Image (cartoon, rainbow, N blue to C red; front, side):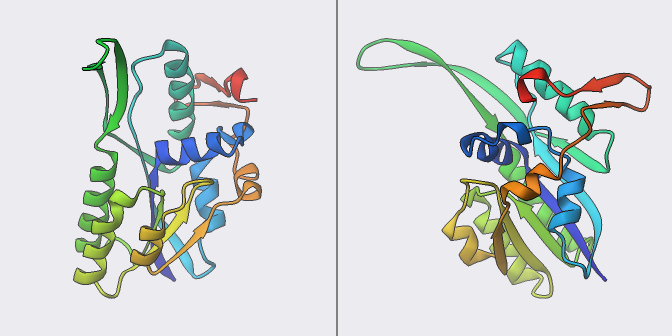
Length: 202
């Protein structure tokens, strides 16, 4: 059996689902999905989910908190970057707006991918993302660790030709796999506190 690690770009996966209008699939069990995506010759060693806690919308924060609490009941490791909101101003008209962006996720994935390869923590890495900023990290692992296998699992609507070329192989995550990889509607954390799927996601 080959050891496989999953590296999941949380926002890339989320917006892929949203853009495809698969809103009923947002309550996604990453561990279940990993079990479906892996080959029969793979044994899951680690699942890492990279995201940032949003801070610019109370209702969205509430839904994200419920989802992250639900994921914490599985064998999925949560790794956080930053969510920054900055005031932007148009130099031409003088109008301003708040611009929110997620930071550090692609860097965190790249660092973990290379560090875990160095520690011989996996034989196969499956990256769930369509972010082409990950190409240098994929190429670095292929060059430094030629026995390691890197595969891309693209979220709906988020494919990257550059990542296809860089990785050893790639595939797209389809609707059926998402639908059968949903968390229970109601569950509880280790303290017995109830966690419910947000009504807006039902």
